[in-house]
Length: 387
Image 1 (cartoon, rainbow, N blue to C red):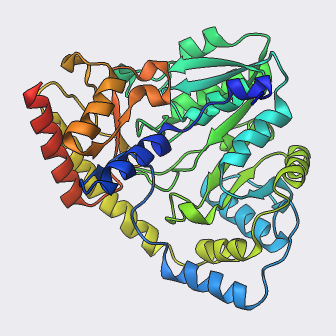
Image 2 (tube, rainbow, N blue to C red; image 1 turned 90 degrees about the vertical axis):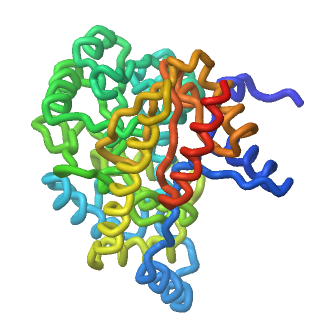
């Protein structure tokens, strides 16, 4: 088959590749402990499910506006205005089937071929994939362990060029669990305003923070008009399969992003949006319980990893991932990923799944029970002892 040249520039999300490998092993009757996939293991809260059923029974099964149902967009605008300390309206909201389209649409709408986008590395792999796909130049900024996996502002300044069109930030971050400080955000905002650069702020883990509160760069002076906030329901409400996300952006850009949605997916399922309204309007106790459980698991997995000879692991501040340093083991991250799965029956991800600067690290998700986490750690420890 002769494919378009652009397809050679399109990457993937390795978590799904490793998940498929693990499933094949399980078909042979082998138990696999899943620490690879970034998906909460909790059920979607019952009030959200009930609202979706109610919406289906009340005929919310037809096309809606490409940008989202007006009443849902207004609910999101009120929620974001309150949670981020900014003032946005429904005209600033675009609802999408999952949050990934906001990455795709905003980069497609704002960045020309040959222009540059600075993005975190290691970081979510779809950033680099989309930048490459549209013919722009990905410019990685290294998330350094010695800085708690936060970017170096001086390095960021050195990477900015006349061709820089966008900076992507992700806080709390996948894969490291790091959080940008208020000082970091102020420095990034100063760079963005000085050079008139858009910022795509991936805030999908904004509710999964273990200390303090979330800060959005959009709340800083001069940033609301040049920030695209990406958020959604997959992580906060354990709704990965529902495919419900949204972006907050300047109204003129929102019109263009909605036009891209018209051309691509038409709209987001109406009954899903009705469920999303209920999620934001009801009390957040289910979310609070989930975060409290993640916090317990975080303590267990970090303590367990640091007891294994040759592994060093920092305590993440948000999300539900750890990013341990495995350089002392003397094995490439990709080989370690393969061997831990095939020889220990534990699915983990190589740090290089999140970019070249991830070499020497693994990513483990603690979106699994404490019992399974302990079992997985025991298997990894036994495997490493045999090396």
